Amino acid sequence: MKKTAVAQVPRKRGLSIFKWGCLTIVILLLLCLLSVWLFFRAQRQKWTDEQPVPVEQPVENSARPPDGARIYRDTLRALESGSAQTMQFDNRELNALLNQAPEFKSMSSQMALQLQDDSLLTRMSLPLQGIPGFEGRYLNGDFVFTVQIDQGVPQLKLRSGSVHGKPVPERFLKQINQYGQKELLRRLQTQTDLSRIESMRIENGKLTLKLREKSK
Image 1 (cartoon, one colour):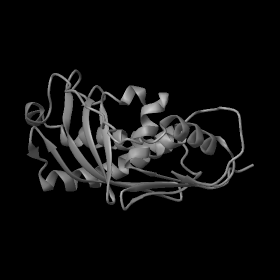
Image 2: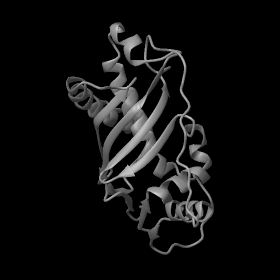
Image 3: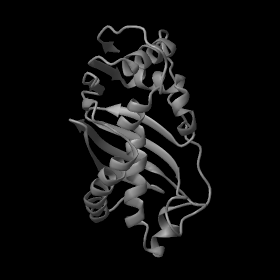
């Protein structure tokens, strides 16, 4: 991980900024898009299950694995400081960070992530209790996203997906992205403040997060 030097500061909200900057945005978008896609009950049996499936996290087999505790500690300091910061994570560093962060423990059984080129690959077993008519059911599948934030405004697109080994039809992807982006922005405006994030991008298999200086 590459970052600028930061000063020691007291712990506050942990990785809440990072969490909203990446993983929770993905989950929130899925819930938004599912409210449209799964509205028709004919899709209920085809695309959802009564039980979750195990989601295995990536296993680090390298002789010199990333120091997850150090990455978590340094990331926490950077996010809680008021100064401008730039952080960069490759796929191994990102997963080492998530394995250490208590903020993500509840997600580890529902989602596994991989950075690849300019995309975020996810394997999910997502409970659908937020979708009317789908309480007690799960969306189990693989999804590929592009995600970025510019000047506090998130842009996230579902590029492809596979459920029960079947690809999500292109017409659904188009409808999902048209509706999901609007609903995502509406919900984020009431749930979090992303204004401190100058940018977040995935490029060449690395996630780069830039934070602007905190307003006084």
